[in-house]
View 1 (cartoon, rainbow, N blue to C red):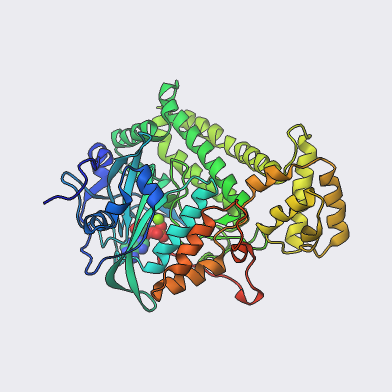
View 2 (cartoon, rainbow, N blue to C red):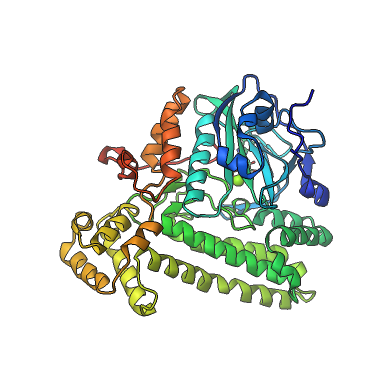
Amino acid sequence: MSVTPVSLHLHDHFARELGEMAVPWQAERTPDPRLLAVNDRLADDLGLDPAWLRTPEGIGLLTGTRLPDGAAPVAQAYSGHQFGGFSPRLGDGRALLVGELVDRDGALRDLHLKGSGRTPFARGGDGLAAVGPMLREYVVSEAMHALGVPTTRALGVVATGRSVRREEILPGAVLARVASSHLRVGSFQYAAATGDVALLRRLADHVIVRHHPAAAGSERPYLALYDAVVAAQASLVARWMLVGFVHGVMNTDNMTVSGETIDYGPCAFLDAFDPATVYSSIDHEGRYSYGNQPVAAEWNLARLAEALLPLLDDDQERAVALATDSLGAFRSRYSAAWAAGMRSKLGLPDGLDGAVATTLVDELLVLAERSHVDHTVLYRALASAARGDADAARGLFLDLPDFDDWCARWRATGPDPDAMDRTNPLRIPRNHLVEEALHAAVAGDLDPFERLVDAVTSPFDDRPGLERYAAPPPDDFGAYRTFCGT
Ligand code: AMP
Ligand code: MG
């Protein structure tokens, strides 16, 4: 008997069109599955009945253990530069692409699992994931979506009933996530490394159709594809910088060609503004520090260009010249996106001279860094200052004469406090709150997790009772460290 809704049809475009990069594979069985989180609104967007997702059949979909007829799950192959060193064969070591769904807007979306067991790409890994990190990806990715940052989404987390051995024994889980695709810079590196230019071309054609259809009409479609990825990543990384997000592991296998944020491993949000901030325990040199993210993105895009060279021009030198020229646009695109975003954070009027705006932004960030000002609290406090009450903002700075001088010049531009409240979140998934919620969840109490998800998925609304979700960490929280591959 099949209780799967008849309307549920999983497509296999990727597996069929790019079979050389897809290994048919099945999810491992789950001894005692228990639903921990399900995203009703996203389910609805996908045309999935949220009530059905809570049934054993629905949980079977979320764990890959009970799939509709015709489903063809695969592990995807990709390469990647990890902290600068190239690994030709990474791929989904503990993940599966279950298939593609057509959402209510008619767009194709990947349904993908993380923690679903070892695949041929697992190398030494156990193929598993623990409850804490999967719930972490759930809450952080949903917060990012609510903040307006392009991202993979979390559909659900199911505890498997299996133990996972890390430094200690932890409960295992599978995350079901949804993305416009899981194709990465590393996917192109993999195709290029095979030496099969026809495969590389098929991958590029697939990505053009899925993500950057305007490139198809261009005189040089593959160069236009590259330009589109450069533009999407410049915009994405600017958004990260504006909200204070630190990805933590910007390897080329963790950078999409769609421009969505992917792979929430050692990520975290800034509390005090400091460009040198690093959370990842293994990023000793600050390669992926907050302030270095635009540089890291540009470096990854250079690797994408190398992979695409055979498609850009038959003449290698000409291909390099074209790619170099396109990559050159990254900096100006990034700077424009950052500047526009900061103008909006500061509520600056449209007509304000660009040089004046840049000076105000640069000066504020110097003051904020010097006084260790909380990157989220600051901009809502400034909105109050724009309304005439500067007490909260003044309370953040050690260097009052300099702040007062800056504030007077900024207020003279006529900043719009309502626009600032619409742009600047009150609540982000703060590290101390995430830790608290995950700790409780692993011990069996999901209430703090659910309250946190609720608080950070309406980040802009001033809701009474949620004050503790807007506050910076307590002084005794200390330096925060995050971990990869958890
Ligand atoms: P990540 O750091 O999550 O981006 O993972 C980098 C690579 O390691 C990818 O190929 C993953 O599939 C693989 N990987 C990470 N953790 C595991 C695990 N526990 N078992 C198997 N493969 C893993
Ligand atoms: Mg990854």
